[in-house]
Amino acid sequence: MAEQLDLFGWGRLLLLIGAALLYVASRAAVDALSGGRPSPGWRAVGHWIPIAATALVAMALRRADLAISIVFATSVGCLSLVVGSIAIVSPDEEAPPTFRRLWPFALPAALLVLLTGFAGQFSWHAALLLLIEGCALLFAWKELSLAGDASLAVGEVDAPPVTRQGWRKLWAVNLVLSICLALIGAVAGIFGARHISRDLPQISDMAGVVAVLGPLLVLPMLTGGAGLAQKRRAWAATTAGVGVVLLNLCLLLPVLIVLWYPMNAVHWNSAGAWHLQMSSLMSVPAMPFAWVTWRLDNVVLVLLAFMLVPVSLGRWRLQRAEGFTLIVLYGVYVLMEAAGSMRS
Image (cartoon, rainbow, N blue to C red; front, side, top):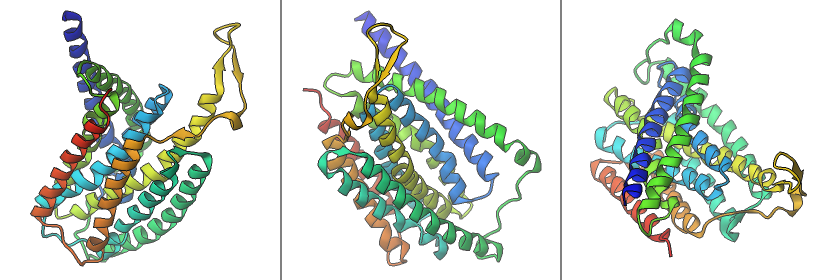
């Protein structure tokens, strides 16, 4: 019993260290890339860096199921926790039309993942389709973002603060430090979540990652979005959240699928621990897609993305009631994830 309590304590300590490092890395990456300006595209990349680092660390530990869970858990959190919190803090704010047009992009990406994962696995063909879709969405995103920046320049929205010159010169250094912090925090966070899940009966480590690491990785977007909402720029946080979803589905997920093949084609040689032999990549089976993630995470993500379509068209404005509903929905999603991932 003492050993179990000690292990649980170590798990909590690692999780706290990982959460702190991931939070600092996310905010630092956003500041390094955006320079304090409400640029949704660069904010999305900054918030996405710790998510990508955590998923890649899970993949390096040969836990593709955890990596995929991180992709979907953070995507669901972006469209539920982040959007819901913004609706509560700033329910009456009108987003610029040029940025609202970016919000429906999450729906085709979520639908394509749902269709490609119908067979319960991800092949390299699926990765190629997602990358092609990501390139198409990237060009459309760039055009609309440039139009949105032009609207900011003529004063449709309050002008953003001027970027500090000293910070601009050090942006590359700050970005590299942010990536390093994200990798260290990802290792600590994953091991902490796995240690805690081992001491909770009947709860798998996948459910622990979704319930613990998912909200922690979305937390910087929540705090940053609240600050933007107070400045009447909540639209930037919503657009950045959609950008994170697109980066998760159209870039991070294909990268994980591609990495699956060489990682499973490399085997230790029985003749010596340091000798590797490469088996045929074609003999490696496709990366499995857990039925819980497909039936629950992916379906919930499609529904949340579909909700943004009438909002982007100006047909529906999210109020505080809708914001509370989205947050409650996220809580129900976590409980359903835990129930679906129960250990036998």
